[in-house]
Length: 176
Image: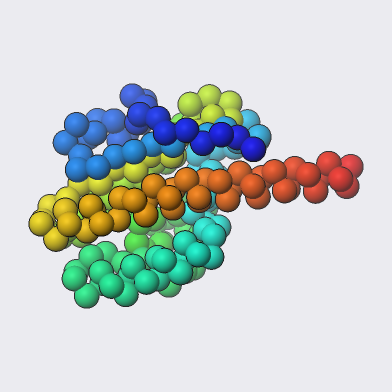
């Protein structure tokens, strides 16, 4: 399986233009086997198939912070490319930018703005970046509380996607 490495937000990313003033940002670099995969496909492969324990945490998070006025994701609905590209999804999956090299989705409420980017650096090499801006004390407190969980969830979500990719590759080789 590809290694997942903490990296800086790449200069090519749309998020790099905002990074100096962000309240929090991080990035994870990784390599996928399918060198032709687009950033949009990788985004769907990560966020459209979250591990069950992460989905449970997200539901719990939504119940807790929804009463404080934070944006919450709607109930888990299938994430498709069409829904993503036409902004039919709520929560974090609001399309802000899309090109052959990058997709950026953003969610904003009165407390916080969260942006997610999947950037394709070259054949098969991608970077998942998160950037958070806070607007209120409540947002800043929330951010500090979730940072440890975020790092675990981001790396686990990428790792899950890479494992599914390896499994598909092994199945394909076994049937060939």
